[in-house]
Length: 330
Image 1 (tube, helix red, strand yellow):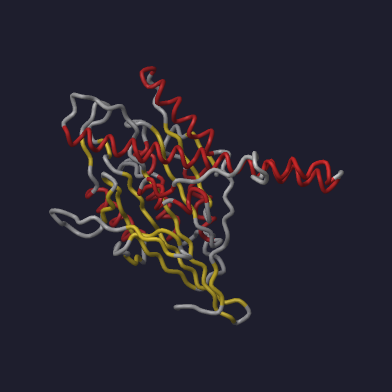
Image 2 (cartoon, one colour; image 1 turned 60 degrees about the vertical axis):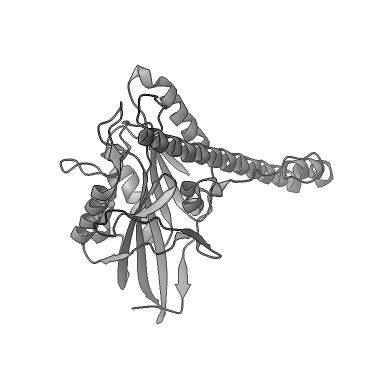
């Protein structure tokens, strides 16, 4: 997992280009921003009309005519969905104007992994259509005033782009299907008894999901370090006396009664981590953006964010190209 400590929204060349390159090669890609309330996550991911963020820039990159990412491709299709997780419930942000949006259920496909049942998908053919859907979803997202921010996001938002490319190789059609998850997390915050009941409920659910995310990241990092240690020991054993090192390797990999075992990953403890299961520890190239506040009053929150980042750097994913040979819908 890559890591960027973000100080300004102008990071497209550092991060957005690699997101587009990974998608063009057929990989799943995830980019998410984490930090306390008011530290600049939404500004970095979505931006403003005067300074657009990473998400609209990535949409522009998919349709840029002089873009080199689509060289050699016969045709492509772009589908967009946009959801938010509010109080541990999933809501479709692109369902049109509904007074009360019903919550959607999360399912898990045996091969494709977790997905949201009945989530709307919208096919777009140009950048303007993609940006219009992004703006519609942002307008429907739940926000509220807090001590740190007048329009604080009270939900986690996941903007998903499914990028399908049809390729003709040796007169045989094939497809690559890449999923780009662009995630704007709600900010971590301390509970304040002066808040109304709704704000307290929102805050507790936000913190619950972020705590679970931290546990998942820590467990994944520990497992990655253990796997790396085992590989190093096995490499030494293959070069030296395997009989003297075999027992040590077995203990690290969980063999034997007192050996250390891989940590259980509690993905299902929150909707957020369940939906991001593949992005966090599976088939995805994942980038975490850590946003921090320069205020001395935010010292504890900044330290917590940097701890998240330190753990995330240790996670090793194994992404693979999502290619379907011998068939094409074009």
